[in-house]
Amino acid sequence: MKQPAIRDIPGGITAVKAVRASGVFCGIKRAKSDLALVVSDRPATVAGVTTVNRVKAAPVLLCERHLRYGRFSALVANSGNANACTGREGARDALAMRDSLSRLLGRPPREIFVASTGVIGRRLPISRILAGIPEAVRMLSAKGGEAAARAIMTTDTFPKEAAVSVELGGRKVVIGGMAKGSGMIAPNLATMLCFVATDAGVAAALLNRALRQAVADTFNAITVDGCMSTNDTVLLFANGASNAPRLRAGDGSLRLFGEALHRLLSRLARMIAKDGEGATKLIRVEVKGSRTAADAKIAARAVANSALVKTAFYGEDCNWGRITAALGASGIRFDPLRVEILVDRIAVVREGVGLGRLKERRAERRMRRPEFILTIDLHGGEARAAVLTTDLSGDYVRINAGYRS
Image (cartoon, rainbow, N blue to C red; front, top):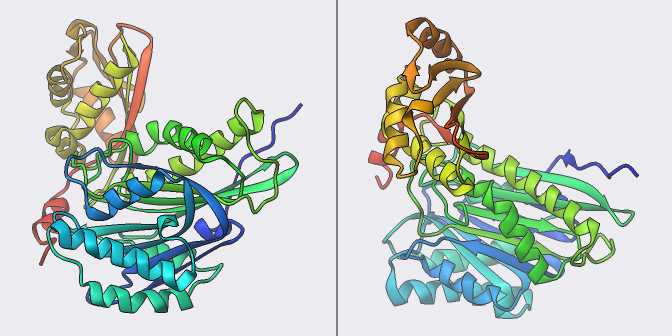
């Protein structure tokens, strides 16, 4: 029997039935929209993953408490201010955002989620936000996904949206989402901000399992600058509006749902990596032939996060010595005399030794492309891992040197 196809479809989070969203300007930023709402018009289950940074923003701590109940009604998110390292006042501000939206929608407070992104250490202009929430409620629309995606942008250069559809139990099911992030990207169990909806019916525990499996090699396999945020949050809610049969453990439809979710998150993760601050290139770093999958991931991240490697990518310089040095510093066990390095299948190192300037020049021509693959074969096992990364340009320094000004 032919498996139903997973299809990319237009739209983002509001491609999902019974989901409305909006994005408005409330005065946190100087001119751009900075306040987003997402609402499920039907009761929904919810799952989420958040940053493992020891320093967590007030909205992250609030989300973690609400996730224990497993129910979702709505989300309010602001950009321009992270509400992180703001003490008890920051916690009160997050609660004020939650309670305001709860009253306006008539939904239980514990089903309202809050997220923030932006500058760390400044108190929210809470009066402006509380004045903006009623306007955002009035602007809620089944076509408001893009406006919401724009309202959560900080240094992003474009809104990040995606949606997929798949047939489950004879019914069309949609998963749609939006994300933001281009700097401080080296997530552990999350990304910057990502909100995903589906009209499938899924229990919170199963939803949580599917989300964590999908995050592992999507959002958890990208890096721009090796910096983990205080505000990383991924939320996934399921409202059952498709009227497809409810997904259950051990069901083939649940596996297919997981594949569709993985596809969606892969698309969003790729957008985040490609939009890395000041980036001119997107590079897939593949490590294979490792003793263990954990070692392969450590090695891939060590190379992908190396400032020296990333600047060589920007300069289109096949400086493979920097790559081998990053491998050696990663702490994994491997034999340097068995290492092979390839750029888009052009070998530049074999058995730990360079193959000469002619091969390097061929590889450098490939490195001029906006996207290419760096493959590192350790020839020491069967495990592999891959990480998406970017180059490191002078623009990255310029953007971040003036981030608060």
